[in-house]
Length: 264
Image (cartoon, rainbow, N blue to C red):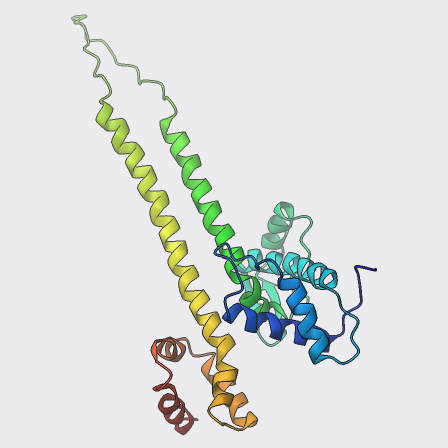
């Protein structure tokens, strides 16, 4: 059986819709990776939704591998100063050639390039976002350990000038408490950095989950599809309103949508 196949846009759309729904249902582990059996489930769901499609779990696995490589490159650029996202062109943009060349030196095999359309990126943030963010936290922890190693390295003592009377100079022994305080400081700095990354991860993951559930929640309220689209186009772009939405229980959401629609 061939493990590679050509994908059309509709098949990619169905694939990502299935994965977005599975993410909301909690099919990922704490590390952000998909649980065992995911590829089999996705292939089965695709066969149900696309009549006559020839798709196997290995095809899903290979497709996600390629998408993840491209997403990771775009994610790294988006988290580097000088890069941004052009929502109209659906691509990563960069401020200058110098910034781009510096990034390319560090990522020579990157599969995503600036100014090349990548319309799937926002949706892949839902599919792969937690996994990539966990990698960033691990890198922060590694940085903290490296800094701690550097702080514990012995440093040469400064020379002490002798007086004209040639009096003996009493050298001050380094207090053990000094070393302990330095270690605590380094660990604290690394911990605070990791906690900050975790908070960002939690907030972004909550928003992505809420956005992924929003279409089905609106349709469950009996709204016509054109109204669902209008609400989606406005609500998902308003961070403050989405923040309020995530705090509401199911009984409060219809009233929220009613007030929101009156403001359109």
